[in-house]
Every structure is written in structure tokens, then in C-alpha cells.
Image 1 (cartoon, rainbow, N blue to C red):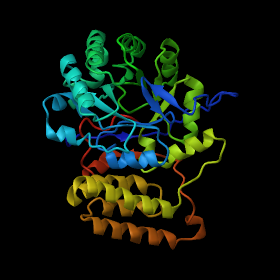
Image 2 (cartoon, rainbow, N blue to C red; image 1 turned 90 degrees about the vertical axis):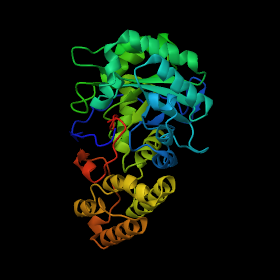
Image 3 (tube, helix red, strand yellow; image 1 turned 180 degrees about the horizontal axis):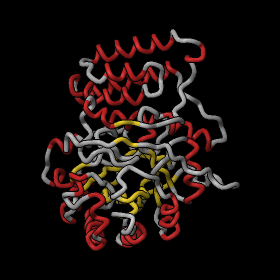
Image 4 (cartoon, one colour; image 1 turned 90 degrees about the horizontal axis):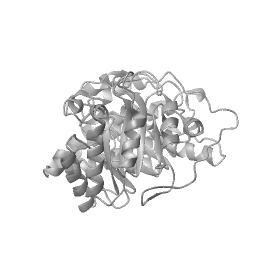
Length: 387
């Protein structure tokens, strides 16, 4: 699944603020089946990104639940070592949901069984929302939205295979004329899933256009199991806005957490009635070093540095001189060289004017070109789905 092409994503559109009187009504805690969460802020599964190192950082800043990268059910069922490597975890990496993709009900059930038997995660999620071609060609991901009866068989078989919580992630439908999220959601609930995540764009939209939050509200109104909202949550304030407008039980954050784990901290601070706390350059520099160390610890120095370099792009976006720094950082080899470059860059920032030495605010333009994938090549398996 390596070498997937990426498009340029834009998040200029901002959801309207909640109606007057709308409140963040979600409780401090929530449950998905038997899985108890400390809060309802969820880190989306992003292929090539949400590994153990990234999840550790997201949890540190308040994320209540993380998903693994999307992995092949067939690879798990066949015992492929590389597939299992994507599910590396540790005792502190909990609660955790392992997301799998595939189209064969028996294979998906077998993979779910492997996850439960080996205690690789606390729950299993079946991906029915990924729109990238390599996944669609297998009849998996969002392609399943075209076949409600196959969806029924998949959820039914998986539910029989495991006792741990089972969840499903869907899109609005296959195309604007085939928006069947509500039908699929009802099937998912009928067949025993414990929760459903809804990304309200169609597969045909890919990552373009705007998320239709009203669809999340429609699904929530029709179901009794928890509904997780996903799509265009750009700022901490958007978390409360989504809950207020849709009534969803939890909010899944994707791209807006890249280089910005502080979005979880600030969403929780807003809920507590406190002001947001922006990241300082010193905190950002320290976190970059810690993230790099964890990546190297996971993969070894050569691979760890390569896997981490894309995060440098996100951690430094919007900073003075970051375009030049990112261009150079995209090819740096060796942990020591990366740390030296980061140190030099932040020393240069510290030498700026008083107006330039301000706390870092990520609520502005979030345009990100995935042409950076030439420098940061690992965007598989399946590409990054949640936006």
C-alpha cells in the first residue's frame, strides 16, 4: 500500500457556531460496550501516522481513546508479521481500538478473533469509510457502503467471533445520489455493534467539500448505541459545536491533531470553563525531541527518523521561516542531525522580535499539501482517511 498519491486538502470552510444556548452536554466519561473511557475525545485512525509514538503523545494531552492505524484483516488472519507490526502497543496505550479493513466476512471475523485472542487492543473497528483506490479495488472500505447485505454479514460474523466491543466507521454513502449512512447505521446496530463513527462525506467526495454534520444528527436520532462524530473539527471550539449541533456521544479528531496534540487539552479546558492554553515554542521543541526519541525507539534510527520527518512538517507549520526549514528537514538523516536542526531552528525563532516570540495558535489556515509525501513517503496502508 506504499507510494499512494495524495491530493491537496483544504479546510477553509468552518462549521457554523452552535445555536444560542447549545451546550457541550456530553458527560466526562462514556462507555463503548464494556469499554470505559475517561472522556469522549477520540483520535482518528490515520494510516502511517497513529502509531504507538503518536498515540502516546495524544493521550498525554487528554485524548480519551485512540485507534490504531488501519490494518489488513487478511494480513492478520494469515499471520503476516508486518501487519502485526502496525499494531504494536504497550500497557499504557489504553484504551485502544484496532481498526481492520477487508471485504470477506469470514476473514474479518477471523482477524477480529486474533485481536481479541492476542489482546492486541480493547476493541475492534471495521473500516467502511476509506475511499482510496487500493482499498476500494478490494471491495473494502467505503466500497462496502454499496452492499448493505454484505455489511450485515460482516458485522454479524464479527460479532459472533469476539466478546470485546465491536465498532464500525462509515461515510455518508458512496456518492451524493447514494447516501445511505442511516440504512447502514441501522444494520450495524441491529447486528450487535457497540458504537458507530460517522464521517459525513461520501466516498466520491474523498476529502473535498464540507462535512454535512446534519447527517451525524440524523444517525444519532435513529440509534441507541453511541454515535461518534467525525469531520471538519478544526479547533477546540468545534468539539462543543459538533456535540451541540448533532447530539453525538463523542468527537473524533483527525488532521487537526497533526502537530497539534494541544487540541485535546484545550477542548477539555473549554469544557471545564477555562481558557485555552496555547503551546509555547519551548514546549513544542521539547515535544518534537520526545516524539523523535519514541519513533526511533519503535523502529530503529534509520526507519524511525524517516517515519518522524513528516511530523516535523506539521509541528512547525505556521512558524516564521518554517517553509525553508521543512524543505531542508524533509531529507535529514540521523537522529542527531534532526535534533541539531531543530535546536538551531528554534534558537533562530527565539532571536526574533517580541511580536514573533508569541505562543503558537493553530486555529488559522490548515492548508496542507500532501505533495510533502515525496519527502515523507509512508502514507500506507490505505492512505490517511479521516480529515
